Length: 305
Image (cartoon, rainbow, N blue to C red; front, side):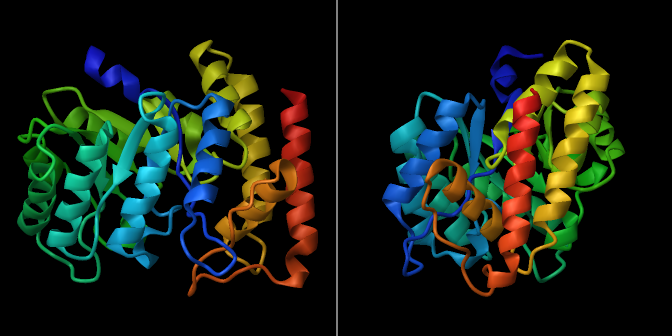
């Protein structure tokens, strides 16, 4: 692998939105989460994506969050900033801002709501990339939420842009990872997106993983990656099973997954991160048992490592 791309190997937690008790973005709480993840030994952070509740935040809020993260981990972790908005102008503003802070890469989903033709999507991504001319660009493929799926032809077109270095692949078929790796003449990095299949994604060729449950149990994902690197497939698979059972439990709550995870982090580490922003549902009293059980499952899984 090209030396420039090696920094994108490893485990990248998707960073959670951190709010104060009134629901406003909290700089201090954002920094606390960044310090916690830095201490856990992860490779880098993916800031401002789905787990960061980006579509429910203003441009200024997203700038504030990235600034707080970079204050803590800039130069210490690899930072990928997701900058896509519902219009090109705002996306470019966030791209310029991210480059000014010295992030390693920017990323973007395709435009959502309107189903645009591939050439319009390529123009959107290339315009954003041009706003940060000295920064790597990563395509974020999440068709189940964006409503648009990356295609081999679109990736080949985007690969003409030398700043495009890879794909964050959150489609469910692991074979897509091979498709993206085979699609272009020059080497691209591909991140596994679905947490439930990290070891499958790595086995078929993903460079690393970016995941929305990594932050609440980074030890498990770091251990999976380490075992796979040593060829210890059975050990990696056992931990993947543990992580998946925890995910299923957390997803069974009335409250949104991210509300559950923030509450677990509060209980385990004293991290006050707030809840989630409406219209995402917060926790209700009936979620107490689920949160407690998920926390116990995480602690038990970590103890086995």
